Amino acid sequence: MGKDINPAELNGSSYLMVNNGLVEDLGCAFTSLTGYSKSDFCQKQISEVMCKLFGFELDLPKSTSSEYYLFKKSCEAIEVQINVYQVGRGNHKLYLFQPKNNFLLNSELSLVGKMMKENYLGVGLFSCPDFRLLKANGRFMEYMQEAWRAEGNLIGRCLNEMVENQVGSKTEAMWQNILNTGETAYLKAQQTVGQNGGIRYWNASIHPISEEGRIKYIVPVLDDVTEDMLKRKHIEEKYEELKKTLEMKDEMLMLISHELKTPLSIITSSIQTVELVCNDEMSDKLRKYLNKIRQNTYRQLKLVNNILDNTRVNAGLFRMNRTSVDIVLLTRSIIDTISVFAERKGIKITYRSMMDRSIVNTDVNIYERILLNLLSNAVKFTPEGKSVEVVISQIADKKKQKVCIQVKDNGIGIPNDQKDLIFEKFRRVERIVPRQSEGTGIGLYLVKMLVSLLDGEISVDSKEGVGSTFSLVFPLEKARKSYTDSALVEETGERLMAASAIEFSDIYYGA
Image (cartoon, rainbow, N blue to C red):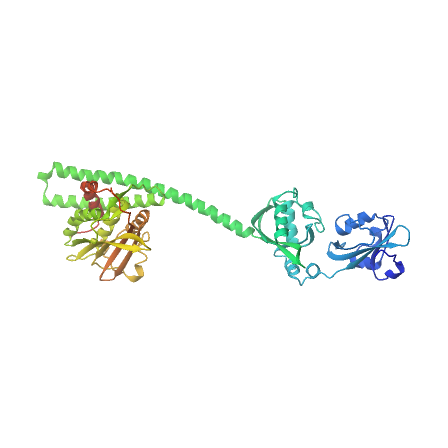
């Protein structure tokens, strides 16, 4: 270094001869190495030539040996070592270029090379720390043109030369963080807009590559996920349309149900008026027909009420009025009220509780709906002369005390392959249910939703031909000084009797 060099010794070398800052000559090997000939560089400023070769003005003093990325005339990047020598005692300098073996940069057998060749993914190779683009495939160029409106040849240009307002941006901060930490960055669904207005979406992963203990390259990998995104957006749009349609359906159901409920209520009131006004004038035959009208009116009211409640729950409009109540007292009051309906069919309802009192936080009306539905089903599917039993007990679940209310019948039971279906909407037990006992398939579905609203659980254990046991489990409250008690007894009068008449309306007593 620093010694004079004889040009005669340069045969077969890649060099530039410079005199007073102007390129005077270059070797044949230089043309082979870079693709540039004498006509490209002779009598050009060395600063201009260096900018052409390296992408920036490279002013190397004499006696210097450095490594840089050189860009051929074909835009291919290679790594070279540059040595600067003084020639003679004048103003001549000689720039000697020696190519370095760089497998990652120049071999198509490298992972980066294979990925670029396939062109399925957009792949670029940037040098560090200047973030200069050394290599890229067509898909990556498409992204840069669409995302950053980067025009022309991008090879050899730094990221801040391609991206507008790059300095101080989030993009610069992200790349700088990758360089500082060595961590890969991931970007989801980056949107680009082509010149024709077409929108594309890309997932990006930006990987650091280290050599000799330092990060030497950064490799962005881009995956065009436009088709997947458009499908997802289409599904989301269809989902929103479906959601609006279902909301309209719920509104229509509520409207229709309300419209049906009004005349049914009028029919019920009319029957009561006829019985009150014409009680002494009615024959047994007329009473029988009025009872049939009332029962079928109640059946329709039960269906309408179930549809309305189901719609309200699904729409999040179901109102609750929770209070602390003694579930033992409430359950006994309900059973006392509905026993008369079971007795008409010759079925006895027995009741036993393992506790004198059990306080839960619940909605009394909702609990009544739940228990009435389970009891009416038990009576409906239990043959005459058999019994239905209600048992209340306390259980421990994950160190939490809970109350369990079981409704056990001696009825037809549920086939094993249909146990999981009975709580689904519009699903009914098939094969063994008489036509006159068929329901709508809404009741137990609604019961399950109402139980969930009360933070409870419901399950069934059944054996075909033996009977079924439905179990309700609710969390117990800690001991309280005050809870609703006497008010419950007062409320289990005419209101509960009317609700029971509607709930048991689809049970035929042979009349």
